[in-house]
Amino acid sequence: MTHLCKETLVTVVNGQLPGPAIEATEGDTMWVHVVNESPYNITIHWHGVKQRLNCWADGVPMVTQCPIRPGRSFTYRFAVAGQQGTLWWHAHVACLRASLHGALIVRPNRNNSGGAAGSSPYPFPEPDMEVPIVIGDWWDMDLEQLDKNMMDGYFADSQTASTINGKLGDLYHGCGGAGGDVEEEEDGYVLEVEAGKTYLLRLINAGLYAEYYVKVAGHRFTVVAADASYVNPFVTDVVAIAPGETVDVLMAADAAPGRYYMVALAMQPPEPDPQVPVASTRGMVRYRRSGVVVPGGGGGEDVVPAVVPDMPDMHDVDTTFFFHGNLTSLRRPAPVPARADERMFVTLGVGSICRDGEPSCERSGSNESIIVATVNDVSFQEPPAGAAASLLEAHYYRHRAAAGEELRALPDAPLRVFNFTDEALIPWGPVEARLEPTEKATLVRRFRHGAVVDVVFQSTAVMQSGSNPMHLHGHDMFVLAQGFGNYDAARDVARYNLVDPPVKNTVVVPGLGWAAVRFVADNPGVWYMHCHFEFHMSMGMIAVFIVEDGSSVDISLPPPPVDLPKCDAEESLAVV
Ligand code: C2O
Image 1 (spheres, rainbow, N blue to C red):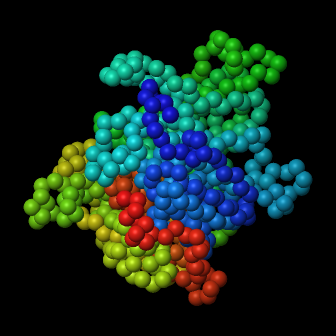
Image 2: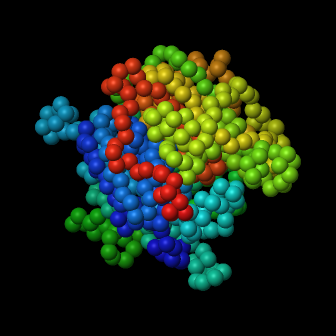
Image 3: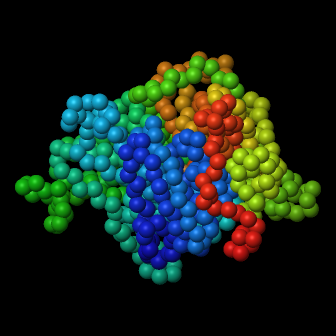
């Protein structure tokens, strides 16, 4: 594909970027045949699908399955039950998900909606049209190489841009050959609308790096759902959406017919990092002619200039904080459990490690340290690709070490207070001064079936890139509260929303702040919990939650599908 004036080879699904949207009705059982024609080991994750008693289809390499090798195939079978709204799918293979992703839309079953004929199946007036809006990013380099660079802790000098439904739609510099200085405008995404109609925009942030602010000039949004859970509707002119999140909004085409820019602005709090160029991108909402001639609308000369929205500042962290704070759930399918059985304080940070894996370079005699991301001061060690089985198989067959690695219990972090005001420690100061030595380990935390778990995610002072969208597989989380600064139980527990907290699979932990969530560990299996910023994930901001079987077979993990890919040693050698 050619973007940014350069042709780049990308791995995509069915020749499309974004990949095909999968449309389902609640209660459907999906069969998705994945044929791997790429040179990479691939798995596909169904982001936000709860996979109840079906961890085998969760698609995390070496965690829930051995990957699908080049030339092989695997059929993911899963049900979309008890969920409605916008989810998505993506390869769970490092940076490759930048080009391997698409929407997964679960519509309500009209026969079950109980309303009169012609009534809306949604808890809001039925829109005239539904449109997936996938925000992504484009890299003009090989995505595997990008991932290697990430893990080595350096950002290669590559060009990157943001996209709406795969289109760039902005001005780019540097075209016209090596070191060229030509500016070129690429076509952007265009949404044609008809005056008076209402559009349900299903926004998905499939990007690797940035949280976005999304606006359409001259229009307002009514937010109706987030992460495939309905919310109490509220009106806003800006949506904040972090990697991994989905937000559904209604937009009425009620402006004067014309052309209006739709802008997705990549946030970059607190300060721009010159090493990581992030961008904004713009598409267009264009009114269709309906008898009346729309100035500049569709086809003819653009007589009237398109209207540009007034965007928040790219360093603005308050707008996203309030946007997420406005989310409250509309339906309460299950009441929020009144108290937790287990509490965890989880710090999200950055540390340094010696290239050879030793925490201290002095001890190992090497002096090359790299930067890693951490959960409770430990950077996650992914199970080795050459292991005999995935962690889930090891767990199911009770082979503790079958994954080739001794698992370590996720340590309980003591409640800590971070200094967010000391000049020497502020995030935009020199990072080296704030790094603590850390280590690599495969961190797991076991929960008995049905345990009610409270997690407080605390961002630490070393975090540079603002928020951390923390995603838990296999479970939704009630987001009870969020705040800036240090979490303080004595003050903050009283503020927990136990009445109508939003239900999310990805919780945005504010930069230099915290978020408190509660979830019920009732889905047996081995579940990934990680930051959805790809670079934090590649750098190790991950833990694994293991939920034990329940007391009877109907709440226990069934055996694996017979065709689950194998990872025997011979096969793995063959592809290296
Ligand atoms: Cu959308 Cu583990 O990821």
